[in-house]
Amino acid sequence: MNNKALLISLPIDQMKRYRIAGINFDHFHMGDLLRQASEHPNAEIVGISDEQPERMVSAARNFSLSPEQVFTDYLACLEQTKPDIVVLCPAASKHGEWVEKVAPYGVHIIMEKPFAATLAEADAMIAAMKPTGKVLAINWPLVWQAAEQTAHRLIQEGVIGEVIEFHHYGGNRGPLYHGADKIEHEPSAADKAASWFYSKAQGGGSLLDYMGYGTTLGTWHLGGKKPLEVTCTWYQPEGLEVDEHAVAVIRYAKGLSKTETRWGTFTDPWTLQPQPKCGFVLKGTEGTISCYDYEETVRVQTREKPEGFEVPVDELVAPNRDPIEHLIAHLETGVPLIGPLTVETSRIGQQIVDTAFLSAQQKRTLSLV
Image (cartoon, rainbow, N blue to C red; front, top):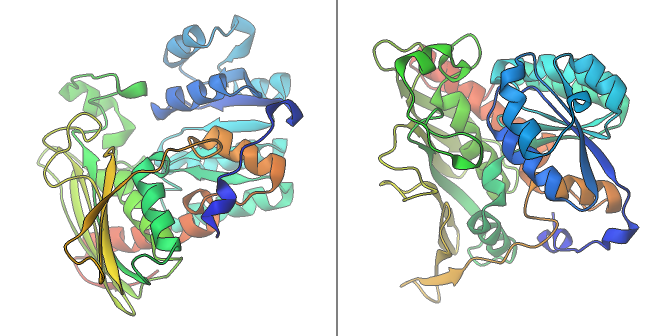
């Protein structure tokens, strides 16, 4: 896909006004996505829904929603507010269930990462959306980091030749140390016990939470290549039923790539980069690029300049700053969705995650599922 096609600006006065509903607040990123919807000049939040009303209090207050716009029954929310776009933020193991519930209402869906808990669930989501003709977009927040988009632009311009390896390290202090807009919180043992993030049955664990970033954005940077096999191991602390650290080695026809997920980094990357740094190192046939989360430059090596040089990150402009404006731009103009938001790229990422999960369970190398 030509990245230049993404850099269009839309005349706001020529766009329709999109009605947006937020359903299921399991993931705290719902607050971020609703804020983006509230700030878009051609979007409005028409309703929110969650079975636990206390989880919607701050959103209702922050976005000045009336009591008539706040629902505990998602069906009532859909039927009464008639949204064009639904933002879904359920627990990872419930993604398929919620798409199947919402899809019949003929809405576009933004699903907060990961794609799903399993490949079978991802395929069920794709199948549920197909008859509707509507878009299912998977939001990977790292896509909206300037370093990632800059690195991908350089790749498309051929600066490092064909990309043959990605090396990813991703994570933070833990999913309960922060909420919407990165507001800090010190979790207790009781918080962990009550959270789906730490529930095996609900798709918790650092591997399922974060490895999809590496595998999906890595697939994007590699131009959609599929690997041959995956070898993965993880660390599950005593007293927890899910992992907090996982490492996967991914074998392609032309080389090895790696993705590592960590709950328990020394610092959160959006505050202070930990060591190792969170982000990607990309190796091509003609050079390398390192792009680290939240940093203002990417570092490039080429055959002409093997000593390396810094490239300032691109200034992100509409419609490439967040998933709300990006999906609306796609719907208005037909401009292609940026790679990781598509089900095609995210499905390959999910295949790798599924294989890594089984590899860690079985303690052996497995062919791509």
